[in-house]
Length: 290
Image 1 (cartoon, rainbow, N blue to C red):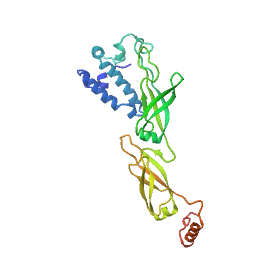
Image 2 (cartoon, helix red, strand yellow; image 1 turned 90 degrees about the vertical axis):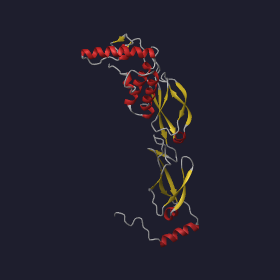
Image 3 (cartoon, one colour; image 1 turned 30 degrees about the vertical axis):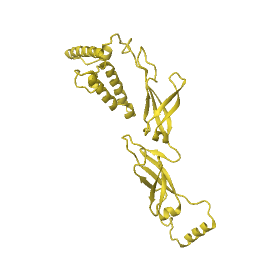
Image 4 (cartoon, rainbow, N blue to C red; image 1 turned 135 degrees about the vertical axis):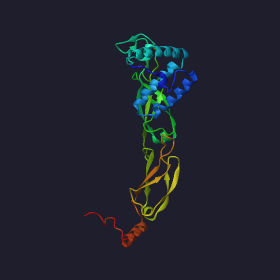
């Protein structure tokens, strides 16, 4: 075990600070290392636990004074003896340390956090919604939660439900439940990073002659210009019509061209195609490798 400098953990240079200064430092540190802004960063998750621990001790004047006395006494004593810090100051000033387990036998122990994952349709993730989900609780029974899906939540982002994790011991707080969001594509849009991908179906004459067509977006629709002679598989990029970025901006909408030939034609259409066949010198296989 090691000493924990709670002031340093909160980003404070000295212990001579007011409770309001401690609260301000806590808010800044908690925002910087919040799990929702550091998804997948185990270091941030451990750091936020230390930040919460530091705040619990330093935000109460009585426990702050006790911490200061204990820290100063033991830190000075260990420095004089030339020893390394080996025990958590948090455990030391509570007393009754259980050496076999490394924890205070009578001190509050926070419950463990629990994480699960749910799929959310892309439109719900994009616009945000309130959603009722049924999840298996730590006791094995199904429990219903109403959660708020924030607008533009990131794929892999987490929603925290306070106190819904495993039970704490000796009066310690319950752990939290983290719900990881997996964004589910629909028939129209597929999420690729911050971009939205969609298929744009064109007729042969639209592709050959060029056209101005309407394409759906997440909000409504927009018109784009199709250049003459565009090919199947080519992609058009429409800026700022994609998904929300982590910084609040927008990705792009990427439309992949797919040229569609009519399955059924009337006599007039067939005649036009036959005429085109006779007069056109275009052969897409002309340069094919033999």
